[in-house]
Length: 299
Ligand code: PSU
Ligand code: MN
Image (cartoon, rainbow, N blue to C red; front, side):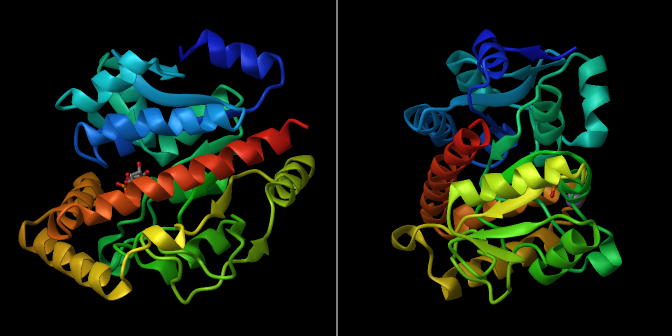
C-alpha cells in the first residue's frame, strides 16, 4: 500500500544509508518557493554526505517514500494539501487525497520502509497550557512507540519545553544532545534545560541506536542538534515574537492541528522572514548530522 522509490528500495536492499524527510515542513512549515528550494537542498546535502534521501508524502492516497523532485515541487506549490498525522493517515489514503506527513506519520512510513534515521527541523510536543487544553502532539506518542531516530534542532518555545521533556521521559524516549548539555530551543542553542545525555559523534549516536535495537526496546530516539551559532536568533527577540504569535492564536480561536502551522507562519511574519532563514539553516545542519548517523548505522 506504500510506494517506495526504486532508488530507496535498492539502497535499503544493498545496506546503504538512507535518511527519511517529512513533507509537513514543506507544505505547512514554510512558504513557497523557499519550501521547495529548502527541501531540494536538504536532499542534496544528504547525497553529498553519501546517503540516500527519502522525502515522504502522500499522493492521491498513496504514501510515497522517496518523492521525485517534480513531486516535491508540486507539494510545495499545491494549495489545500492536508496535514496528516497518525489519525489522519487511513482517512487520507482511503479518500485518495494528497497529504503532507508530520513527524509522527513520517516515522510510521519510514519504519514500514525500514528506514531508521529521519531528519527534520523541529518536533511537535506538549503545548503550553496543555494541562487545560490536552494539546499534546501525536509526535510524542510516535516517539514512544516507533523505532526511528529523529534528528531535530530541539523544539520551538511555542511549546512547553519542560513538560515536553517530562513526557518523553515517562514514555522512555532517550533525548540526546549533540555536542551540547542543553536541550536546544530551535532558533536558539540553549533552553536552560538538560538533555539526558551529551554525545560527541555520529558514531556514538549509532552505538546507542544499535543498543536500543539489540535490547528490543521499542520506540524512537531524539537527537537534538543546536542551530549553528552564526544563524541562531536573538533569544529576547524570538521570545517576543513567540509570545505575540501565541496571543494572536488565542484571539483568533486557533485550535487543534491548525495551531502549529498558524504559529509558524505568524512567527515568520512577525520577524519579517528572519526566523525563516534560521529555520532553513538548522534543517541543513540536521541533514549533515542525520546522514552521518545513517552511515555509521550501516557500518
Ligand atoms: N515544528 C516546527 N516545524 C514544523 C512542525 C513542527 O518547528 O514544521 C510540523 C512537523 O511536521 C510536526 C508537526 O510533526 O508540525 C506537529 O504538529 P502538531 O503539533 O499538530 O502535532
Ligand atoms: Mn496538537
